[in-house]
Amino acid sequence: MARTVVLTLLLVLVLPFLVTPADSLTFDEAGAKNRPVSKVITLLKDMLKQLEKEAEEDEEIYDKMACWCTTNDREKTKSIADAEARIEDLTNKIEGLTAQSARLNTEIKNHEKEVAENQASLDKATAIREKQLAEFNGEEKDLLESISALKSAVTVLSKHNGGAAGFLQVPRSHMMGVAATLQNEMNKHASLLQGVLTRSERKVVASFVQAPQDYFDAAPTFKQSYAPQSGEIFGILRQMKETFESNLSASQKEEMANQKANEDLKAAKEAEIAAGQSQIEAKTGELADTDEKNAQSKVDVEDTKASLSADEQFLMMLKEKCQMTDKEWEERQKT
Image (cartoon, rainbow, N blue to C red; front, side, top):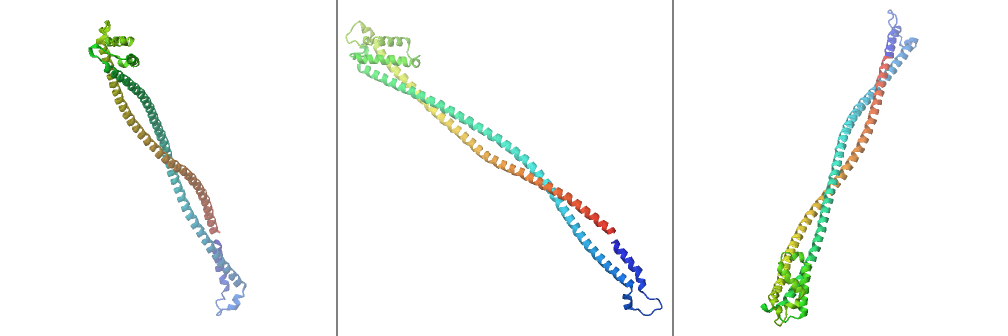
């Protein structure tokens, strides 16, 4: 710019030398072109045009550079702001997903514990039920065998019951069998019969077991005094049979109730276990999705930080470059 001004001043100073004296009425154009001063002026004009052209080109380049600086500064500044906002959003998202992951892990462990406890309860109930059933089956078998034996004994004695005369014409083997049955059932079910038979009845049973033949003598002897007791033996057998039948019925009812209770408990526990397993599966799937999102968010935040760092470095270099360009432009305007 300054050089252009200098050249312009030089032209102003040199131009008067091309003009003839005032008394001259003609202008020698051909002669003027050949004068040294004219050559200088021409050279100065050409230089001025060249300088003006260079100045225009320099200004055009500077304008483009200034536009580039402004555009990139604006874009990078926005990109940095967007990256910072995204990093903040991703950081908050990661914190939320991390908390959600911890919560799901805790809930899954709690559900697993509940399922294990319910399974343990079910297994325990099943074991108790199996023991109950085994005990019932054994007790039922014993009672059925005892009832059958007593029924057979009652049947045998019923055929030979002579009323007040006692048991008449009963084969010895039958009476020995009845006595053995009575003794066996008294021993086997002592606890069950406790409180059922009176002391006097127990004495009659003991006497009968020791000497069953004294209760079925056919001929009247001094043993005849036992005749009323023979009918009592018959009554004791029936009473024992009825007691066993009553106990069997009660045991069977109790077994049915135990079976129903076990089925209800099993259904409830299986439903709880199924519900727990369903929760575990659902929350495990949710946990996997949460952890995947969390991992991706961590990758995104690192990528965004890297991009932010690159943009910040670029912007810093951009400002340095553009400031230098402005300074050089200002310096050129002064020369």
